[in-house]
Each structure stands twice: as C-alpha cells, then as structure tokens.
Image (cartoon, rainbow, N blue to C red; front, top):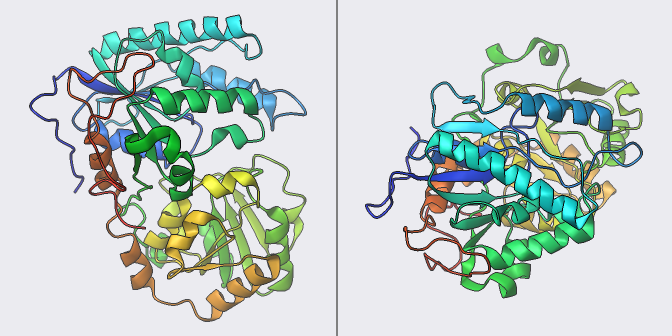
Length: 420
C-alpha cells in the first residue's frame, strides 16, 4: 500500500507542486527520482511535472542523435498538458515550448519568460495558486524569477554541469545560484552533500533514492520474456540507458574473458557501443518499457553497474543499484563513493581485472537474495516522498529571490528516508 504524505492543517488546499524535471516523462525512464517522488506526492496535492527544458541545443558532432532528439522534443511539446496515469488525475505533465537559444544572455532571458508564461497558465488551469517548486534541472533557475512566489527545493541528484553535452560553466553557475536561493536542498549522494555543505548549511538534507519495492519484486520464470528465455544461463545483465556513462570496453572485457556467460543489455542505445553486439555472447535487446524491466532483471544471474570512471560518477547515486537489490540480484559495480555504503551486499571491482574477477565470483557464489532484499526493504519511494513532503513550507514561508530560509531544521537524513 502506498503511503500518503498528509498536509498539515496550516497548508492551504491550493498548495501544489511544480517539478522542473531533468528528464522527459514521455521518452525517458519513468524510474527517475523526480518522477517517482511526484507520483507519490500527487496523491494529496496537484502536481505539474515540467519536462526537461534542456541544457544545450542538440547539434551534430556534439550530441548523440541530434535530429531525432529535436523531433522527439517537438512531439513532446505537442502533447500539451496531460494526465498520463489514469488512476491519478492530479499528476499532470507538460513540455513547454522552448526557443533553441542558449548562447546569448538576453535570449536566455526571453526563453525564461516564455517558459514561465506557459507554466503560469498551466498552474492556473490546475488550480495551483501557491506552488512549491521542486527543481532538478538547473536551467529552471532563471525561470523562477518570472513565476509566482513559492518555496524552492533543489533536488541535487547529479552534478549536471559535468555531463558532456552541457554548457559546463553556465550550468555550474546556475547550480551555484540554486544552492543559494533554495529554501531546501535534498541530496541523493553523501559525497555531493558533504562537498556542498558549506554552501547550504542546515538547508541541506540527505534523502537518497528510493525503489518501487512492489514493482521490483522478483518475478517467476513463467513471466520471463520470450526473447530472454531464448538466451541460455548464466546471464550477466544490465538494464538502463546505454550511453556515454557506460564503460563498453569493460563489458567487452567481461564478454571475452567469461565466454560461457551471456551478456544481456536491456535499454535504449544512445551512443556508439563499438560493435559490442557483434560478439556471440552479447545480446543487445534495446528499449523495454518500465513495466517490463523487472521481468528481464529477474532472469539475470548477476547484475552489473559498469560505469565509466569520470568525475560525474563521484557525485552520483544510481537508482539502478536499489532496483537490482530489490530483485535480490548479486551486483558487481565499478567504484564510486555511494556504493561504499553497500559493500556488505555489493562486490566492487576497482580495476578491470578486479571487476571481471568479481563477476566470476558472483556467478559461482551468488550469496543471499534475502539479505540483499532486506538491505533496501525500508527504502520505498513512499517513504522518501514523506521526507520531501515534510519540507513543504507553511504559507508564510515562501520563496523570494535571494532569500535563504529553512522551514524544517533537520540534521543529516530525514525521518523515513531509509538507510544506506
């Protein structure tokens, strides 16, 4: 049963959430943190999810599949405001029309006004008079200046200024401004929170990531998809986007050195994978819907997290880790700070040799499924949503440009956020 974060008596009924997401609901994984949180928060308040307003114009030689991405964004905008979850009419999604201008200061300001006008109209339509702004994408920062006053919560899930396609210096500046202007900053990574503690003080709260425990319950063999059923065991699997964040050379090494294992990659391919799919024991299955992902994951013998060792991973806490553990899978990962909190249930390969050795070991001695599931048993998205709801300010504690307030003083993790 989904827990419902209840409003306090001091909160007016027209208080709702406006979420500036870093992803597009229609085309990206719906497992992302902002989507999961807003789905739960919308059980008691109207929610408007504003799909990603971008960090840089997709261009050839700089972006993967630029023309496809532009076309996809046009189709997303054309959907207007929709309620994609029939069981929850309070959850609405929109993609604002965005002008493809990122280089000029005055054109950026024009874009911010245009986006704000669309969001204001959507809020009026939904009856959200006093919004709480839940911001994941830094480019929403200038938009806030043209929106009605409201509390700002910065969802610090990643250091987006480090991503390859971002205009790093511009995004970094926006991140810094959000850290200053937000009433609360919620962190998914201990390392990132520790690094930015001087900037946010007691406005910073660790909430981590959750997992949909019901959705990622292990499935029986009778639910195994036909295309997976045709692949023999043992299976070393990965589900998620196959992009520049994944170390494809490392996957190749596993495939070549553990030839009896079948490498199963489930997810959209967003960059060159270097002919990896041509190896006889590598199976690139492509995109599968979020609903089907647990049926594929349940068929893995070992799950891998082969992240490319770049600076971005030092500040991340991939949701995939808890999804793998909820399925009871043995997990092998490349190193990053947040995974150290899970060393009792996750094997970490700090070099390519170590990673391959860990996969071999996990195939032979997988360990306890029950122990892995128990590790994340208290980390439902409902509990994380309750932690975020506790930060919702009272009517008088609303955001004004440049203000720094803390409506709820919290030390460390919020109640209900689960344990790492």
